Length: 344
Image 1 (cartoon, rainbow, N blue to C red):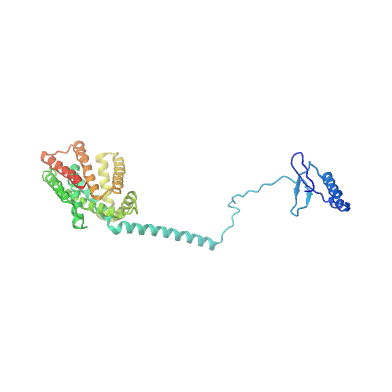
Image 2 (image 1 turned 90 degrees about the vertical axis):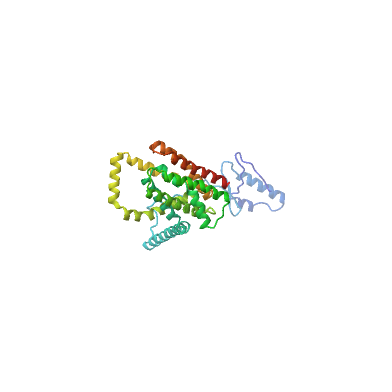
């Protein structure tokens, strides 16, 4: 290196354009004088008060003062600055969005049909709820749940004869007190009604099919219990609406609503809302349980649930009950306990 300098604030190296004539006039007699002369020229041309820079062609030059820096940033274009699309491009974009929406709708519909309707779960779900509602409108709530406590018997019989599943002998023996207790309660029921009794039996059979096929549909966790029940409810609404309009119709609905408001009062609206919410949550939680257990265990738990319903309905509604009727209910409940022990 020929020479080096230190500025007061920062190091700088520069050679001005007028150095070239000076360098050209250097003596050529020896290396030492030539180097000394060049260093003297560089020292005389340096200034610590000027910023120095290095040019791309590697020539050291004196820096010229620059103006203030301007900062450029990207910004979002306003709607006025947007480039308008042609009508043909707009139609093409709209058609593309419509096609994607159609694909998603078809995808969802086919998935629902494959997972639910193809297994007839929604039909069984609808029939079971309608039959249970008809039963409760004809007989006492306690009697409805006593008859519906025989659901494990229907589960075993359907699984054995229609699906070919085998069970140990203890399971079949546990069905005897269940069937006997339900029969004893039905024979000694004071307010017995054949329509209500048949409604409870149909509801048992329909819910057994729903539970069995729903459990098969949720195999492999392709759909959760909550989503499964949501799809069932929507499809059941579609199935039930035409029958409700054909059998009853708006006139019957209006008359029934007016009668209910007259007998119960204006609070009837809130009762309907509360009943709808709690009934949906009850079935939602039951399907969440079905997602974790077998169909038979679910039927057992559903039967044990009826114990609290039977006792509470008798106390709240003050339903008259005979000792033999209570004995039949106790025998049926004992059968569910034996059934649960046989399944362990």
